Image (cartoon, rainbow, N blue to C red; front, side):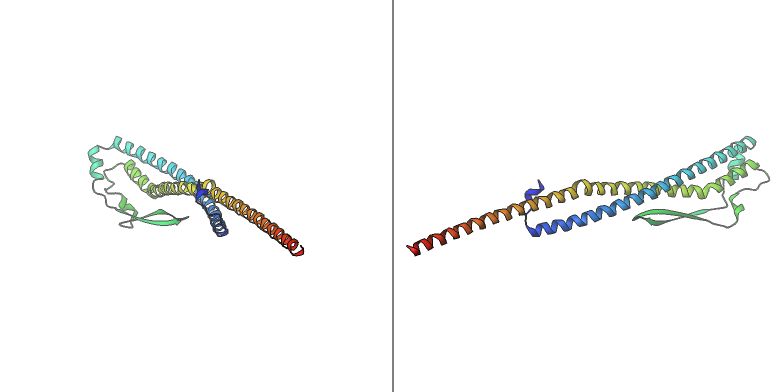
Length: 221
């Protein structure tokens, strides 16, 4: 179908060969990019799985401590203890580039440097299980932010891998074979034209020789 629009000339052959060389180089670069993205993606998936297991374990531990605290304290006492927090957390969202993909980089800082400010209550009238629950949540906070960062990064890398895979397949199965077919078609047409030209030249030569032969015969008569 595409061959109907090709002008089978040597200039077109040169242009198509140059396009083919560029397409093949682009195909190689995209394959290398896809492979590197896959390597980075698999590393992030493994780290994401490790962080998820760690965070879920920390949440289970915190929930267990909260259940024990509620068993030994009235709900009103717990609500009052946790009503006004003393510590605040500020999250900063940056980015870093991985194979042309901007993935998030999350960091956080606290309002005050005092680690004891995570407790918004006095410890005289609260159970130690409540302290353990609050401390376990504070301990897994960095991992929770890392988990969010890795999960979003995995989503972005997966989307880029799929986009790169489609480009590689388009070059490998459509564009490059199409150009190779076009080059083959142009070469075939050029060869046909060259053979036709040779045949015409041979016929012209025979005609000239025949004319020269008749001319000599008339001159000798």
